[in-house]
Image 1 (tube, rainbow, N blue to C red):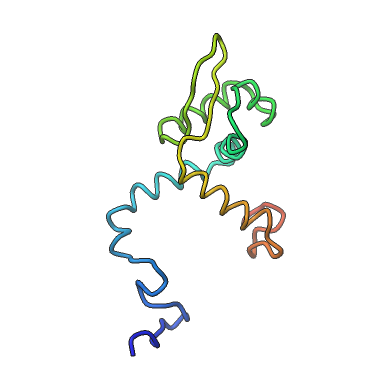
Image 2: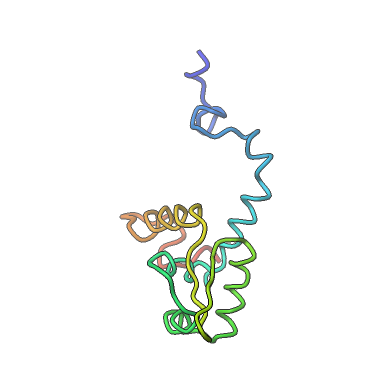
Length: 130
């Protein structure tokens, strides 16, 4: 019975957990680019703030305690990746979350890292392995 066979590490064979490695081959570059956009702490925090609603660049500067140039640089990367949308109102520019995948990933990360009773090993205190 194929369903009873597991890898030596106890994981299920491909497909039994819903993951098909062959499918990822076609989408690995897109997935990698998406994850790289989320992997920068500043960009991640911008997305977290935008998940609660539209924010101006000035609001983001205040929320992040960061300079306008740094916030704008990270917003440019998020725009390039299609994760945020913007609109101009007079001199102000407002940003919003534009990608449902990003919203889903933020919710997952919030559950994993903010609501977790037991944070992943080596990540307690917000710092990874050195």
